[in-house]
Image (tube, rainbow, N blue to C red):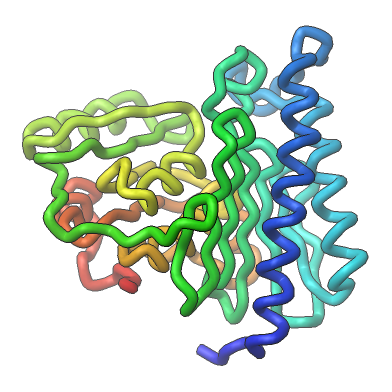
Length: 274
């Protein structure tokens, strides 16, 4: 793929970290006042949204528009706005809205950046934990400024795997997914935020993550983090309208690759490695 100029990429990377913190602080204000929020449902009763999601995304979009008016933006709440620069921001203002509205800390602001179809920046800020995960293509990944590097000796058998599921996937499929992981000797958690669990993969807290159906705004920031920490991911389709549709999401450390790809039933040669 073609590469963006270092100056342009680094400037956007710095801005993404500033914006993630500002957006996260606004979200945290709403979290602390959540008893006053009006909660709406989307496609099913488990898929919720509030004014916090919308206002946080509006803030993020305005900051990027002011700084880089030619960049495209895809956000969970307001969809895709095309750009002319070759860069597209991919944003989830509050990933983990269900934990958010129910008073649990497992939510985050997720900001990814695409160039030529590949994630080149990933910033995930988890306000309740005071943690900022940040990565830029070719520059590595960090947690609160400390470099992240994944160990090759962690596997699904000696570490924990994150999984996700939603109403796009049948209960039978989810049951089989869990059964396959357990039969392979693994164990799992699900915390309600796919983006945050991908950040945990980059930090080595989880050995991998698998969700059969996920959107770009939930995963692309995490994909950049995992790859820059020395891991791998199964590519997400980013061409045209495919960017706005769901797809399987799989990512992990070096020692989880073969097992996770087999459990997911995906061609192992498709993974993008560090």
